[in-house]
Image 1 (cartoon, rainbow, N blue to C red):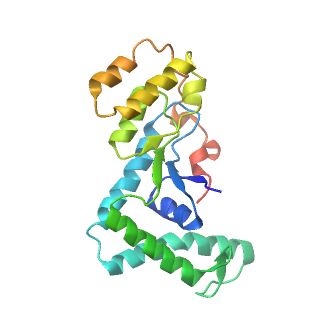
Image 2: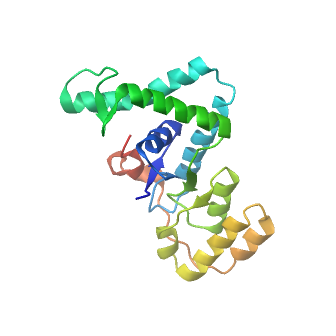
Length: 204
């Protein structure tokens, strides 16, 4: 069954792809109507992908090893045991297999200069301009939930966001579809949310 996972950076994206995710989305901060965190996460992914372009093989291996450290931490926390290359750390995969396959994913990302799966923007998309911005900085599409359904005119706003995604590089179209949409959802300032309640902090 295909599934989608969120990420805040390339390390999280790479781990989720290795685990089998068919789609990746920025975590953003869902339910806030505030796009800033989704923008930050997309920039972090694309910046690291760009860095891979000129990175030598030895350095990529070190990056892969660093990305795999989360599995060691999780395993030690659960079992209080050390990890070697033969230790099964996820499903039926050993740590040795994990390191090799994460390294292979990074090499593929370097070659493609993008993630090898569809990369959606999500978490705070509330306006056609939000959707267009995320497309402009490298997203393949957008997920929108409360940004539509908590707005004054959900149907009209949904259609406008679809148009903005399809014509993200046409400012005139984006301006036109943004007219007379009614009130957007009530936005929430990220800094006003207690850290232990931030959705983006969940997972690793």
